[in-house]
Image (cartoon, rainbow, N blue to C red; front, top):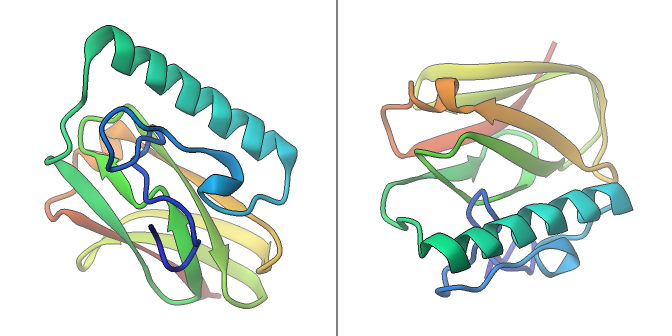
Length: 148
């Protein structure tokens, strides 16, 4: 369980640390839009079907996500290195104007997403494509907010 979300720790496909168990929706974190819950449930369902058809994916070759400046939590908390892409949902700790969401691998910036407005009551989402994940040398990404 993640003490920040009071929900399950999940991989990018919504798989938990328990073999064959997938979680989504408010079991993982509180959503503000039903559209996010629907998309997350579809992702979990597809991954569960893949699990039944093809078996368990590796749980050892993954990247951990950590919270940097201004970030309250991130979901998923783990991303497999061979994932096609990773959608990262998160909430900020305070209101930010004209800022950027920055994803770093140690001292190396992997991605930067500009935002005009960020608020704790609004879920944020970014996507990290596999091409960027292949550049990661450590096993840890940090998501932060930088004010302009």
